[in-house]
View 1 (cartoon, rainbow, N blue to C red):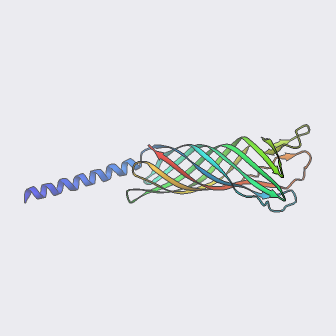
View 2: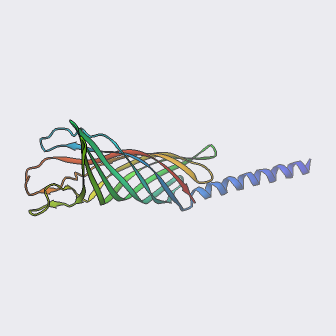
View 3: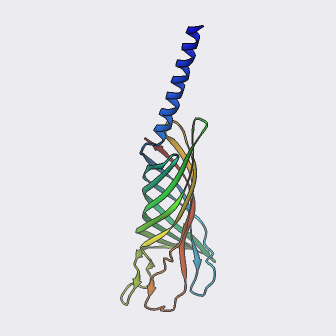
Amino acid sequence: MKTRNVSLILILMLTGYFAMAQSENTRKMAFAVLGGVNFQNLNGEDMSGDKLENDLIIGYHAGVNVQIPVAPEFYFQPGLLYSTKGAENTTGSLVSTYKLAYIEMPLNFVYKGQLGNGFFMVGLGPYVAYGIGGKALYEGGSGSLESDIEFKNEVVLGDPLLTVYVKPIDAGGNIFFGYELAGGLFMQLNAQLGMINMTPDHYLYPDDKSILKNTGYGVSLGYRF
């Protein structure tokens, strides 16, 4: 009888120890690598104030982040990503495709609660991004033309008129939902809403009221260690 009682106490102590160890493990700083697919668009209005009728394009993202515990089950999660965005527009027989590349820093606050053998995650916060490259492709009939997209805050006299110009700084909000397995593998669904008008000032169109903003969603796979 005493042996059974001692065994039961030992089992309870060990169970409590492993539960506490697992809980402590979730509160440690942890790094992750991740990548995935973007479904992006450029929304807003043209110079006449009409809504842009663009279509989604497929891009991708890859990078790293770190979870820093701030309270039980709550984390601050800054990251650094290479991300491609853009849109496609069809006017008659002309198809215009715009692809933009950014270095992006999301600054999310994350709730991470245990669910089954893993952890449910929900995060939200701002992001800021800097444009580092881009291409515009025009296709119609049997011909095509490709040009660079230049990142500038202001288009001045002497700048090529046929070049597409976009402001280099983008910023907005993120939200994501995901699930992380006990071993560190995770998947999440992301959504992003740009809040900065990326149309630069143009010397030829001082009263230009056009609006251009990045929006999109995506899927990420990653590993946390």
